[in-house]
Each structure stands twice: as C-alpha cells, then as structure tokens.
Image (cartoon, rainbow, N blue to C red; front, side, top):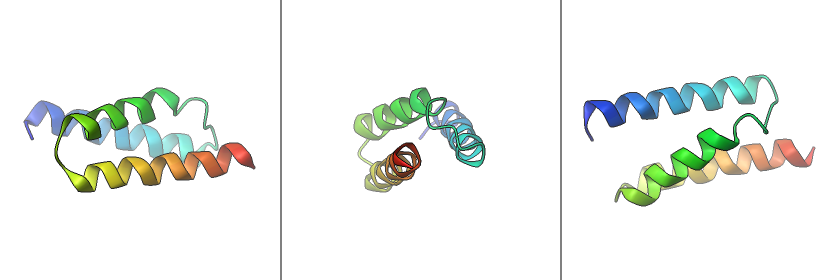
Length: 64
C-alpha cells in the first residue's frame, strides 16, 4: 500500500468514525462507497472485512 493510499484510508476511517459518533448514516454513504472500492481493488481480505463491518454498523443505524 502506498503512502497516498494509506493516507486516504486513514481519512476514510476518521470520516466513518465521525459519522458513527454523530449517528449520521447518510453522510457516511460516500466514504463507505470509497472504502468498498478500495477493498475490491486490492487483494487485502482484512480491508474487505472492515468494509463489511462498517456497512453493517451503518445498516443497523439506518434501520433504527
């Protein structure tokens, strides 16, 4: 993973944490989509699992 990709991933994680803290699943949509794109583009199974966990969290939040 390049420095640029690592920096983007860190920013996405921070955005998702902020959205979860603010209970705002709508604002997280773009960050979730980008994280899913990064997970599909790479071969990192951990990143794919992380994207699934974030999607699950926001799915629960949206359903509440």
